[in-house]
Image 1 (tube, rainbow, N blue to C red):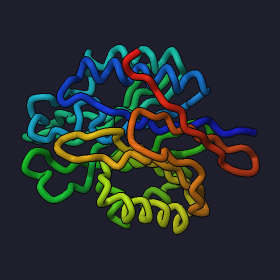
Image 2 (image 1 turned 90 degrees about the vertical axis):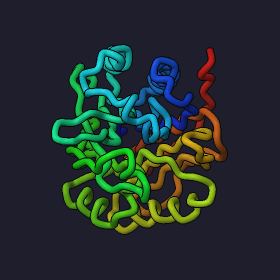
Image 3 (image 1 turned 135 degrees about the vertical axis):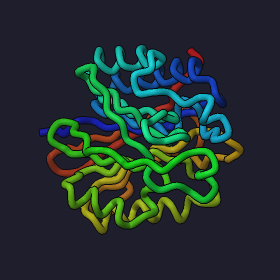
Length: 253
């Protein structure tokens, strides 16, 4: 038996361009569909870029009609898709750094960043996380960037039964060695596979390292993007082991 196929969408984004970034997301979704992907994860704030000074102006509610094309394609492709954007939430004056989960049945879920980096609290509030997802028989937990730096976050995901820990991130060149080692260690410590979806280019004044990656339950690096740029990282597990590959994506076609 083969488990559902997972993918990280390492995408470049245009600052604050929701409509343009939605079109880019659809290109990635079409590429993922060709490989039978059943769960596709985009980086942190993938629909707006990591533009915290614009977060209040760009923030959306979860039922925004802007996401209708992504909802429709996720349903058509039968593919759970996780996209990032600032979200309005009752009880919060400032937006949350959120991920909207587009389910194949047309419904959606929300996951919000629980742990903020220093300085992010000038623009956004901390969120409350979200429920486990399920792709086939494999429960999946989401982390948004700084979340994975808190040991209790991954520990709680493992205790809840997650078999895959998917981190939607913005990691720069300087932080990549430490952060990638941390994610690899989480895989080994908690015996759950780890998928990292990083930005493919500069955003919010940061130079992303790219190099999205996947580690198996032993902490073995299964596949990784070797550079920045628009790339799709696809992984699947056979009865014996995880396997993966990287494919370039032409977002301008």
